[in-house]
Image 1 (cartoon, rainbow, N blue to C red):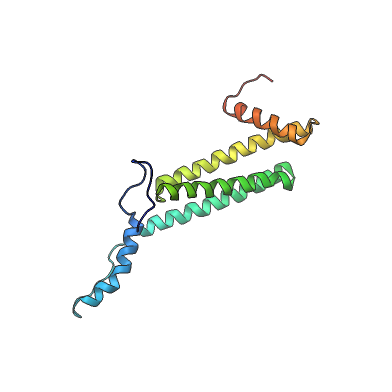
Image 2: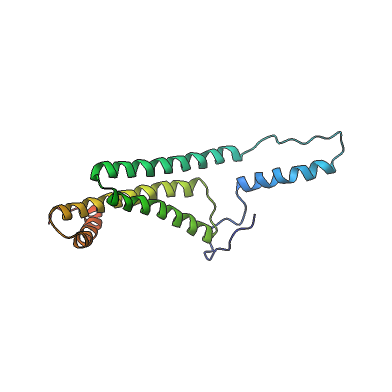
Amino acid sequence: MERAPSPWPFSASPTPTRVEVVDAIKAALPAITVQLPASVSVSLMNDNSAPIRAAVADVQFTLLLTIGLVILVIYLFLGKLLTTAIPAIAVPLSILIAFGAMYVLGYAIDNMSLLALTLSVGLVVDDAIVMLENIVHHIEKGEKPMAAAFKGAARGHLHHHFPCRCR
């Protein structure tokens, strides 16, 4: 149940999560039961980790479904497999990096971090779609792909977050 040390004084709780506590109790029960008289029986009355495990599994399914649907919609919208590969690589990679950062900083996966992860996937997908739209727009106007990528990335990010009617 040891966690990686965190460089931030406010980051991770020094106490184990409910799931870790329940797992430790389940692991210790056989050793405790052996030491008790035969007339005493020990059983698990309540498992608070079940809804937490279910929530984590549900979010995992939702994230995978979201990634799959986003990739499908982008492919249907653009019709190009190579262009679809960009978000197909960027979204899972950003999730892996987020989990890696959480591990290094000693964070546990809880409801708040799952909510943040779900929201951040939406933001990454949204930005990827806007940038791809801009890049494809510049390519369709006749620009070379590299120039279109630079123009689409520069205009797409700022225009998406700070819309204006100027061109």
